[in-house]
Amino acid sequence: MTQARSDSDTTALPATLASYQRAAREGLARDIAAYFLEGAGQQSTLQRNLADLEAIRLRPRVLRDLRGGGTGLSLLGQRLAHPILAAPMAYMSLLHPDGEAALAAAVTAQGGGMVLSAQASQPMEAVRTHGEGCEWFQLYWQVTPEATLALANRAASAGFSALVLTVDAPVNGVRDAEIEAGFALPPQLRAVNLDGMPTPRLAPLDDGESLLFDRVAHLLPTWEDVAWLCKNAPLPVLLKGILDPEDAHAGIGAGAAGIIVSNHGGRALDGALSSITALPDIVARVEGAVPVLMDGGIRRGVDVLKALALGATAVLVGRPLVHGLAVAGAQGASHVLRLLRDELEVAMALTGCATLKDITRDRVVLPAGISPS
Image 1 (cartoon, rainbow, N blue to C red):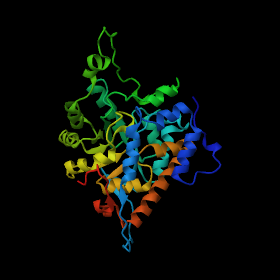
Image 2: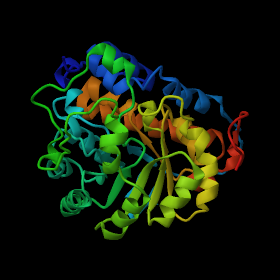
Image 3: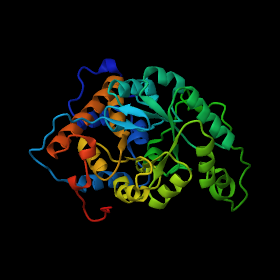
Image 4: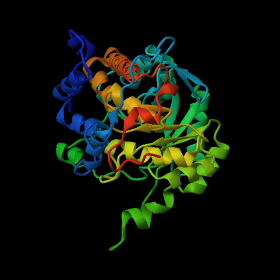
């Protein structure tokens, strides 16, 4: 298993987001590319994320007054230059030696926000020193409530301002591409922020027993656990991985400070609906009670505009930043964010939107299958 090229190997940055994607595909080892760039099963959900965004048409408006416009916003008390956040991604040192620290520096340089993965390959405190834009910490439910809360408290002590509880992957999806490529973590790499966390000790299975349902199910969180965490955590908790409006409603009832519409980038349940398809009904069900964010399939600035037009407050991006980091470290990731923001600004101008608030439902034409809610 080899890493992508280092900064010193890059004589000139790619000029477009598409060229970053091509360069990353060419430079990454097969197993690492399978881990970061492919999805679960036959990858129908990953492809649907892309196809359903592509199917949405934009309705241009002309001769609008764009003076004083911009892409800035406030989100849970954090002032951002644009609504494009870095999604939580594990083991980023596989892409570049500087790993999560490089991404934090890139995000901060572009005035953006970042969610640090609980499975980061670098200590959360160290990552924060490289970029204060890394303000949110993602976590999975641990073996015990006490361990989950301890991780949340550590994040608060490190200066994070919000927690993102991922709820759509209590177990890993079946990722054929990773299996076929033989992906495995190198021995020197681990989720360092989970050092010391309790792990389940499971006895050998009896004949006919299910590892998941008979031995592991009692360790998986429920809505009662989410409510407990929201009540006891030192920071506001957003729920990531919501695709059903009633789950969004239940999350708000449990005390969530935000909802992130997501299918785990197509890496969990293959065959799940696309994030952009789920977004309008969830926005309608939430009724403005909390911010609704979305990830899944965002590749270009026009995709950001489409998500905002359907009610998202902001979006999270993963694979475009994988491309940038793999090709040119912090510089590449920063450039990718700049390109995404530039493309969003162009799309806003050509649809007559001076500010994010101007990006309304009437700026898009939906295909069959996406609710107009």
